[in-house]
Image (cartoon, rainbow, N blue to C red; front, side, top):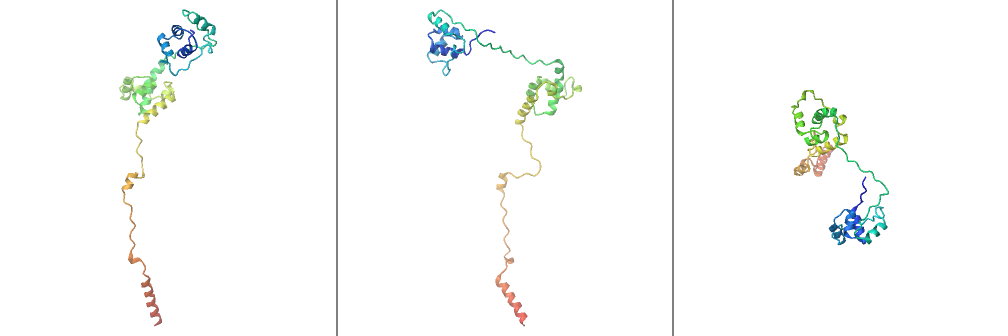
Length: 226
C-alpha cells in the first residue's frame, strides 16, 4: 500500500503555524496548491481546523523539518508509518446466481400479492428487477405467467427480512388508516352541537299540599266522632 499523509489540511495548518517551511514545501508535502497554503497562513482558509502535529503521528521527524527549513529547494519526505493500515477493498456489486435470477418472477408475484402497498420502485430495490417486468407479472402478461408460483424473496435469498420490513413500513406510512367498524363515540364537534336534554318539569298537581292533607284528615276525624 502506498504511504499517504493523514489529514493533509490539518497537517498544513500545523506546519504553517509551527515551522519556517515555504508555502511550496508545505503544499508539496500536503498535496495542496501553494495559493491554498497561503490562504491558510492569511487566515482565509481552513478556519476552525485544528492543526495536527505530523511528528506526533510519526509522519515527519524534527530532523527532516530542520533539513528542509535550511534549504527551500528541498522536499519533505514522509516517514514510514509505524502501523500498517490494511487497504480497504471496494465492495463489489452483489452477484445473483442464475438460479436466483430465475426465481425473481416468483418473488415479484409474492410481493405483489402479499404487499400490494409496495410501489414498483420498492419492489425493484428489493429483488433487483425492472418496472416493466413488475407490470407484466401484475397484469398476468409475463411470458411465463402460467408457471409462476409466489415465493418469499427472503427465503429465496434475494433480499433480507430487515430490508423487506423497512420497505413495507415506508409504504404503510402514506396509507390512510382503515375506517373503524362498529359503534364508536361521536366526535367532539358533533356532541357540542347537540342540545342538552332538559329535565321534565315536575307535575305541580303531583306535589302534595299540606293544607289539603290536614283538611282531609280533619274531615275523616269528624265523621268518626259522629
